[in-house]
Length: 188
Image (cartoon, rainbow, N blue to C red; front, top):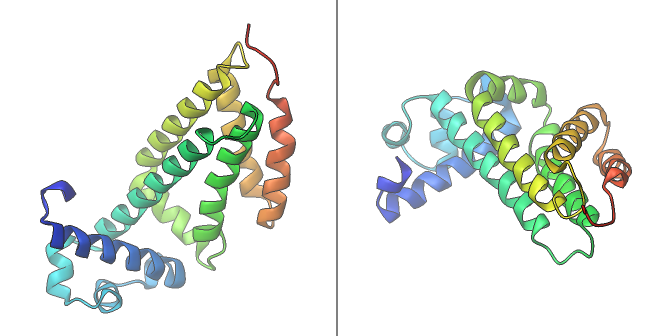
């Protein structure tokens, strides 16, 4: 429904979503209230309710914004001028996980935020991962006979790496190690 908003309302909605993202990261899902979100956005509760029926809807909008950012980051890395497919895929996976790390994993409320994401938007993130996997597979088609399988493997493994890592440097280093699985040559 965002596309039916006037430019002013669309801009205000985007600002609310951006500030709500910060509020959820700083305070967690449970501690964030509609009153607190309205206050953070500098709008009345009535104005906030004119955009979102409840806190779950605000969180869904934030999650959708994050999903959009993940896809854009992956697509930008894959479209870069990096010399090899391996370098582009490595950058794509690293950029994806950097966003999640910087936004959610560093929050003291990470487990709560991931639980809210799973409860409210798990289907969206399955679709997001599918878009990302397909984009990676398209890049891998240049060097692999089974690009979809390899993309699925790389995406799943990188998720496991990110989940297990204590810090982002470890995630980045292990993704680099993982990406040596990508062939350097022609798929032919």
